[in-house]
Image (cartoon, rainbow, N blue to C red; front, side, top):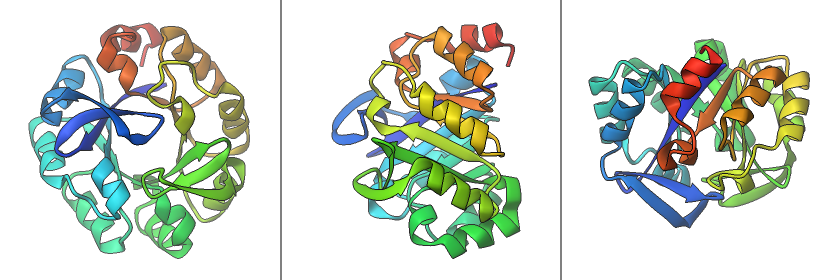
Length: 238
């Protein structure tokens, strides 16, 4: 199981939100590049970057910082946050992004999802960001009536080869993941699943590994020291 540190960028800084609330942010690094270098030095292979400003605005706003991370590390980067045009996805992949994450687009533009999957295959992932079991979009600011498992099935049918599931109410809370939903999703999806939200102990990572998920995205627990990235990577043998 891949352990993937999260770097969320807002206003050019590395922050963590509480339950996706833009008004409840904690700045952990003034420079997200420093955060990326820290996780790289501790053994990370992948980095999960979300442009929070971009997610809310509908277009990327922090690409200069992302470009610096690409330049200064050898990390494989998955990027989300406001990627809603085919041309932008193509440009990002040319610039060195390894995986594009689509969220809002999965709800609002299914045809684009299909086209991108046909063109880029494994380089496209869809994020299932859920609040109380229902998908939230536009930087988690807009709720929908679409259920997690419903969207997962529809996305796989559209050609999506990887899903990323986040329980918004657990994100940034240092509680525990939504194991029940993760188990159901991992069993039904028939594609690799990466999970996020509430991971705060090494025990959580072991339990997720047993459920068969491909990766675990960790944010706040790394920044607070509740989980030591290097120790976790060695422990799980990733």
